[in-house]
Amino acid sequence: MTLLLSESETASLLSMKEVVPAIEESFRQQALGNSINTPRTKNYARGSRLSTMPGTLTYLGRAGVKSYISTRNGTAFLFTLFDASTNAPLAVMGAGYLGKYRTGAASAVATKFLSGLREFRFGVAGAGGQALTQVLALREVAELSRVSVWSRNKERRERLAKLLSKEYGLEASPVQEVGDAFRGSQVATTITSAVEPFVTEGAIADVRHMNVCGSNEPDHAELTPSAVAKFRSVCVDDLAESKIESGDLIMAMKSGDFSWDKAFELKDVVGGRVNPAPKTLFKSNGVAIEDVAVASLVYEKALKSGAEHNTFDFTE
Image (cartoon, rainbow, N blue to C red; front, side, top):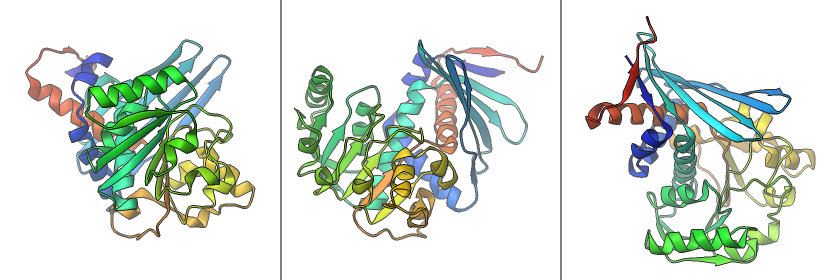
């Protein structure tokens, strides 16, 4: 029988304390040849965009595909998990929250291995739906001595800072300018819907490591090319996918501020093959092996929870 999990059921089974190690292991296994990622495909039609992301984790015996469609009504996410040995469809689950958690966890893993810092001041640009999980994930790998929150939307940045302070006990404050969020911050993250770059080289003077997570479109960027040029080490989650989707790096390459031979993959850092030079950047697009890892975790927790969930026999 195939387990059917709604978006809220999936969310209830997610714990960042478990998701971060699962994401780290997926990249460690990829370095060993046991995680197979396929770059995202996008199908454009009038009024919609359908994206699909397949991946296989042989060390777990699992394979799966995330599919999601974006229209003027928003975006709906679905993940289908298979047993890679028997071909059995194990689960179909809502994957919106899954994506938020795995994206935050990937930033945490990158920060852990690229920066080496275990305590730092943190600046985040963006206060939308994925900003909170970025902060919660980083808490799993380091002590956050201070969090500065910037967003163009004053209400959102104040709300997120208040939530981090009252609900999570962090020293958090909203700031009016993006440079104020990054000033004095050793680690920074951008997680916005920006089309045009807004982070300049002057804003990142104090930043030792940066996660750039806002877009997977080639003509969208958060960092100016001159800001990208300031980083000595540039890490990506998947090189082939980044050459198609990473607007920040694509624009910097076109302007002569970046070369792809400077980039390396996260699996190579986690696997110990690359020792990055400081001032590091991680460009996160989100990859399928992350989704398979977290969906497998959710599936196992659902089975062990004892709670009643809907099922369906797709083999009939």
